[in-house]
Image (cartoon, rainbow, N blue to C red; front, side, top):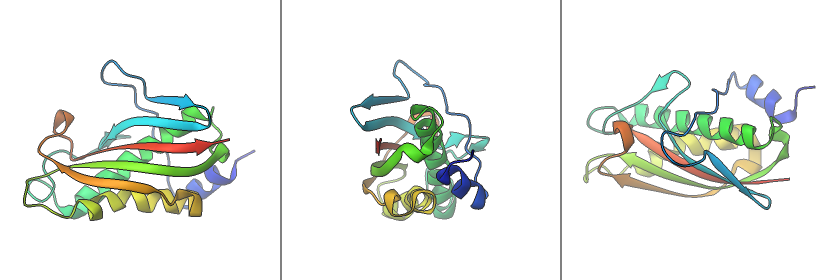
Length: 154
């Protein structure tokens, strides 16, 4: 039987990528009590790849797509943490977004909206979250965006 969240993903035409493996000495997520802390996911997942500085090497619009790619990887990690059952998700508590950009680029919140919008599209009101969106002078492997997350599960 397909869960409500999986059905919503299908209705949106969204296919989650495989949960990416860690690139260094860390785990992809930690469950503590009813909270899932997901390590930063980069804009290089599921066949999508966005690299370079937003506003210089790639457009702000592509930066938003990069953030959406991160959100898809976050949801894939969340699904793994929930043993495949996304209906266990109570809410998205927080997203933390980093945008690879020059100091004069100030549209980080608009870029990270690519992830925020997907969370609300997929989880409805449970997808509304606290967040930060900041610029960074460089990100690992020159990716355009990296986002971590905290979710509450049952």
